[in-house]
Every structure is written in C-alpha cells, then in structure tokens.
Amino acid sequence: MLSTAEAMRVMQRQVTVAQNNILNASTPNYARLDQVTLANRFNPDSESTSGGISSAPLQSARNQFLEKAVWQRQSSSGYSEQSLVSLRAIESAVPVTANSGIPGALDNFYSSAAQLAISPNSTQARQTVLDRSQAVATSFNQTANEFGTMTARAGTELTNTVNEINKLAGELSAINVERRSNFRNATDAGLDARLHSTLERLSQLTDHNTLSQEDGSVVVLLAGQTPLVIGEQSYPITANYNNSQFKILDAQGADVTAKITTGKLGALLETRNVTLPNYANQLDTLAAGFADQVNGILAGGLDRNGAVPTQNLFAYNAVSGAAATLAVTGITPPELAAAGATEPGGNANANRLARLSSTPAISGLTLSQFYGSIASSLGTKLDTVRGRSASDGQLLLQARNLRQEATGVSIDQEAAKLLEYQRGFQAVGQVLGILNEMSNSLLNILR
View (cartoon, rainbow, N blue to C red):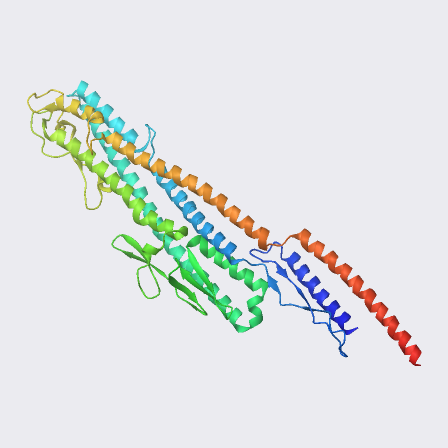
C-alpha cells in the first residue's frame, strides 16, 4: 500500500508537470519539462517495503546547441536588417532619376550653358546660368545635409543600442542572483525562460558567447571575448566618439570595436564609421570636381566686357566638405566668361561649359558618370544586403522551428500524457482497492 501510494504521488507530479507545460506553451523561450520515473530496487525476500516507482529530478528539454544556433542566426539577422534600413535611407538621398536631385540640377546647368552658347551676350541667358548654378549648389548642400543627418542619427542609434545592451546585461546579472540564491532556481522553468529570452534579445544586438556555471549562473562574453556579465556583476560597455569615429570601449576602457562585426551594433558601427563617410567623401569629390571644372573653364575666357574674370563662379571649403559648403559667389551676369580668350563676344567658353556633360572630369569619368557610379555601387550593395536579409530571416526561422520541435511544448503530446497518467491513476486505484479489500479480509480473519 505504501508503494502504491507513492506511485500515486509520482503520477500526480507528472500530471502537474504536464499541466504546467500546457499553460506555458505560448511563453517565449519556455523549454518543455519532463518528469521521469525511476524503478525502485525490488527485493521479494525483503521483510520491508520495496519496489515501486519514485520521481527522478525534473528534466528540461533545453538544448544549448539549438539555442546557440538561434543566437547566431539572430545576430546575423540583426546585422542584415539594420544594414538594410541604413542603406535604404542612403539610397533615398542619392536619386538616379534625371529630373530630381543632383542629376537633375546638373542637366539643367548644362542646358543653361547651351542656351548661353546660342545667346552669349543675353543678360537673361547669363542670369539663367547663375540661377541653375545656385540650384546645383543647393542640391549638393541638401544631399550633404541629409548625409549629416543620417550620420548623427546613426551615432544616436549607436548610443541607444549600447545602452540597451547594458540594460540587458543588468537583467542577466539579476537573473544570476536569483539562480544562485537557491539551487532549485537553477532548474526553475520560468526563470530559465526569462534567461534565454534575454539572451536571445541580446543576440539581436550583438554576438555573444554564454557559459553556464555550476552555481546556476551564466557568464556572458561580448563577441566571445569581452566580459559583459560574470556572476552577479555586469560590465557595461560605452560608445565613445573620437576623431569622427565611434568606438566601443569595454568596462576597463579598452577599444573592442574591431571585435564587434555582427548584430545591430555591428551594422551601426559599419554604417556610421565606414559606409556614410565613404559616400560623403565621394559626394565631396563630385562637388569639388564640378566646381573646379566650371571655374577652370570660366577663368580661361572673357566676360561680356572683354575682360578676364576676377572671381570664380563657385566657392567651397574643402576642410568642411565641398558638397556641404558649395556656393555661388557674388559674380554678376556680365562677369560670366562666355567668350574664349581670343574671341571677345563669342561663345567658346559657353560651349565648353555645355560640353562638360560629356567631358571626363574625375578618374576618367564624366561628372554624371561619376555620380552614376556612386548610385550604382549603392544599388548593388543594397541588392546584396536585401538578399542577405531575406536569407538570414529564413535561416533564423528555420533555427527557431528546429528548436521549437525539439524543446517546445506540443499540446497534443501533453494531452496524450495526461490521458496516459489518468489510466495509470485508474490502474493504481484498482490495485489500491484490491489491497484494501485484502486488508479488510485479513482483519476479519484475525478477528
């Protein structure tokens, strides 16, 4: 009877575990628990109670290999998603249609130069050239300002991401405190789900390596090397701006930027420190090349009064950025050198300005071709990242599905277990009933 009663207690525990699994089926990162039974040693010659079953320690279906696979895919997906968002923003600042942005402004300038060549002494034609020149400068200024805004935004997002990583590190250290405080907490399914949900959120932001300790705590290493959480202590990282570059420093102040190559943080670092400066530099090269070409042509001609020009059409500050500072000087319409140096009143210089659209100016490319190369490289990179993002998303979904199949809760399987335990209860109840009848019969005999 004692063995039978113990069997009922074991089955009651199995029912409780199955019910808890069903209730937590939709809990994020919950891993199925299994209550395994142990067959007690049975000795038929023993005078004391022996045999029966007892409960083994609860077994979690958590699989660290599958968890790490999800974390790796999550880091890759976080990197590609953030890269895609950043590149889309850059693409919007670099239009390729002929009637918008820098391409449209350049085409309008070339058209005004062609009109000036037709009427080199026309005040209206000369004013149109100045107006179109101002439009080109404004277009470069606006694009440069957009790049500046995106650069500042990337820096802000970097700081916010670092703060979020430090917040998650604090949550992990608090979980370590709970798991260390009582050995039972190390096997608590709810606390375990919180731990792995936090680690998965962290993996989207940056790559990490996690090591389980005997006391139930976890050690978390940023990028597999830099301590982020050890026991009950978290080691916050910081975002440091220095010499136009953002750097990530560990808790001791060491530069760990080069180690962070994936996750949202890795993508933001690449965008802020590499991608945006690269495209901004190319934009400055284009702005300076255009201004220098136009100024050079005009400097070699004569104005409407037959005099050599005394000031350029464009000015810029190379140190502050040619695109951001490109501006039209105070030159007046009569001062435009539409004529060649040997033919006062002619249109040789105006023709040179018009032919600038097809004249190699930067690295053997025309100004339009150089702009096109910027847009083309951006488009190619965007297509590559878009494909990578879709692929990473599918791989992440696959990794999560594999984890769910191996460690998640199946309502059907748990319901089947409950039916199995119910039949076990019925069987044990019948045994208990028979034992009770035997005991009553024995007592009646003894009386």
